Image 1 (cartoon, one colour):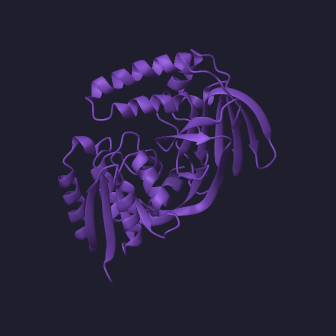
Image 2 (cartoon, rainbow, N blue to C red):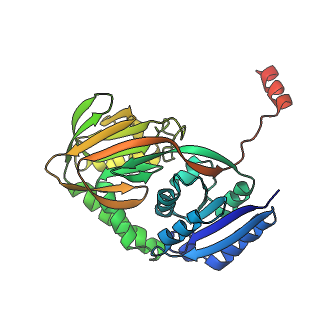
Image 3 (tube, rainbow, N blue to C red):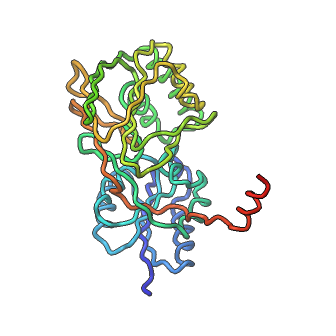
Length: 319
């Protein structure tokens, strides 16, 4: 049997890797896969050459492309690799690592690496807004502005960076104007809403868990989740933000949620709006057209553990 081929691409500007020795990380990954009968090639890139490197990897003969970086890096990889038949492996080296978490990977990159070596390929859905693909979420309203502030401070000392982001965020939450939109689903629902925060997710979120960001119960159900925090006052946005971070987001009374395979969001009086799509901020022409492609991307995930039959019998007897 021919050896499996792996292309490693690490974004040295990603949130975690920027503070590490990228060469040492690449060596650790290479050795781990080579010890498990993979043929490996590794490249360390920055944001300016990421797309070109991914395109070259897609045209190459590698079976799997392992990308190390944050949500923005992974979003670029999805854009370049969807529809190519290549399998995307994700090494969480960013700040939030949303897709990695939903795939069951631990936040520690070395623990995630150990699981990926024995990983299994599966297909997940890919959503898109105005042609821009995303695997996690697209956010409208105040949060894209806060994200731009965070990005401008990339590489700064941790406490300095997050203190400035927090101050700027509180100021924006208190002053950002309402976004007035009409929302129309492909099933025929239509709603006129006012909000400072709208989230469209690739598949729907589970019920919230205290102290955790919301996660999705599945990545292949072919449904968009639409979450609108309708008409919250300026200072109420602070409560909404705290609720999202603490896992109480589904308890916010202003939350309205919908499901659809396709939805159009048309802001009033705005020709362009900011959309934070999988961590990257875009200025998009309106209206915004969202849709979802079922099982449009192959990803490498942690191996699924088989239940031990004898243990299951013991549990049944005790019950």
